[in-house]
Image (cartoon, rainbow, N blue to C red; front, side, top):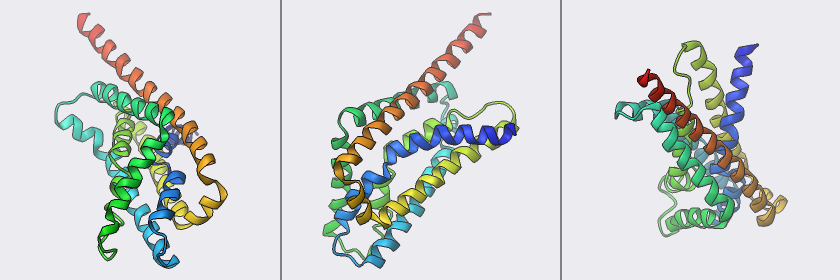
Length: 227
């Protein structure tokens, strides 16, 4: 019972954080604009390729992000402080200026219109940096920094929860992009912007929590050294 509770708890932390920064609903509005005029079958195929690549980007960042930072001598507490700060700042910017983030995404995506669609635009620019760019990678690494440092038994539910959240976000990306026109008709820009601000506030809170956890761990380490 505790095992499944731990998975659920980690999922509920990772899912809103990734949802806020990826924003598949807002992305669907832009996706519908930059793929307009393409056959429905091609738009759907492209949407699910973007979802697949997005899952890979998030999973790799979650699984090896913190380990890679540790390899370069960055402690877990330092990573939590830095990652929490980045996530909190991203949430703050999205909360007070969500249009800037969406405009930046649209610029990245529409820049490829001059190129032939025969190339693999599913990865660049539609996955990187449009859907899962540096912000998403930073959030994923910050989440990976919150992994337990002791028993292996605690690592399994942690990774099951956060990786499950990443797969759920990728699934949402595929659904929202594949049915982008319906998402536009259902929500529209105004409701999407409201949802973006609500999720941005949640992202800000998660970033602050990760930051506080890192500061607390660093202070405990300093106190232990003094004694």
